[in-house]
Image (tube, rainbow, N blue to C red; front, side):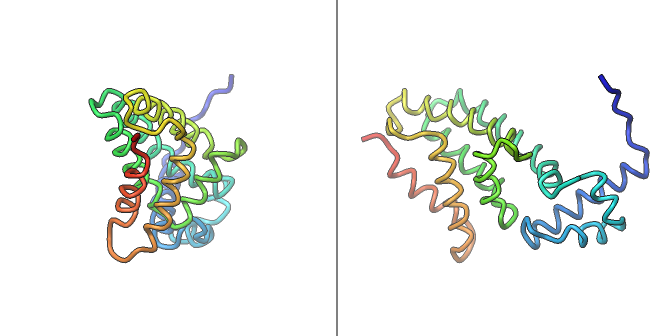
Length: 187
């Protein structure tokens, strides 16, 4: 087992500045924002960025891991909610907000659900697993159609998030998700 050395203070500052600037750049320009611009805005060279984050996915994964972990924990908490379908809807709405942060992120996370080599796969897979528990709970309660899977719901969420971003005004994804849920109720 190798010991991980703590970062020097200047390396830690560079790391934090890179994350701050990446957050800003991805919010402004989407997941395809220029890594060179991120490094420049952080006041470091591109080599420093690549030393901390060898790939774009590594940088995105670092930014998103905490956000996705919060959503997975939220799903675990919602497993005790008295209304299983409302719990599932609430979790998906929060997840949609988290994945709609950067233009292009919806596509990236949808692809990561099926690509074990993606650095985002583990976080996405963990959310799918706990989401499956919410789906099964809603089915057992007779509130959700029996033929619905968590994977299908996540893909529908990605579609609603993408399409909602193309509707005028705020709350497009939430509106589309509500429409989808009306069609998912058990009859």
